[in-house]
Length: 313
Image 1: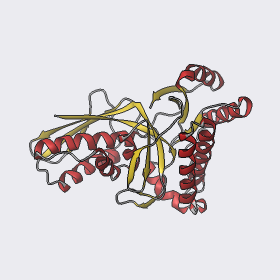
Image 2: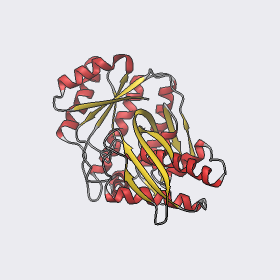
Image 3: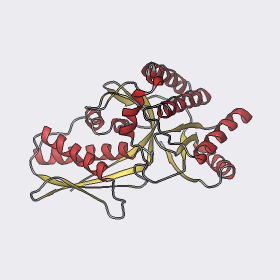
Image 4: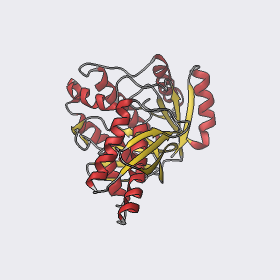
């Protein structure tokens, strides 16, 4: 049996929109913080005959049928490309909610890729490819998964994936969990719909500019400027959702309450969290780890009805 685990990540500059669905070729660069506490664990073992198949690890929730198919098809494809014979059972499970806008596909495909290359190396006697090469393979299953191979910060820029230097303080991601259930519009579907938005024109250029600006802010340790860029990027992406064809909406009233709290903190005190939201209703609030308990108390007092998860890079 071969085992691997990989973390999720939260993007400040978003991967949204594809030049090609084949291989997940992004229209713009992206940048994320790796979330070491949000993990997917994968086990792979050979089975006799039949096709490759998936089942949840003990005590893990089942995946949606479409997610299961996508997961197994990815494994079977990379197995065949490397001329590996035989059939395999894949087991996986997350320690955080799946298909809820918390980047579970990123950690899942990263862990699957790592475990698969362990298996292939053992079966074939050939060495595994480098981490960067594995990240590029993983990207073809889930684009954002390539950023889960490097920490604490990672950039994906065309065919380059690697760590990003930062002088920001050690940060903790406080995740305001609004809804941990399956989201109605998958990220894959979102990628398709946003290209019909009138706002999609210029999107690659806007994201590329923010990518350069946020890397500069991080390199100088400028938390406020990093937060400003992330905030602009958050609304840019969700504006694409709201003006897509057909349009769709991930925010709930509690999502908006958390966002307004974060905005008010900056307005009234001159400080606050780096705030972002992926394709889902849950809000990520990156705060200095040394201050996280204070931010946790203030948020829970200001917005009753949410629960909080947390992860450091």
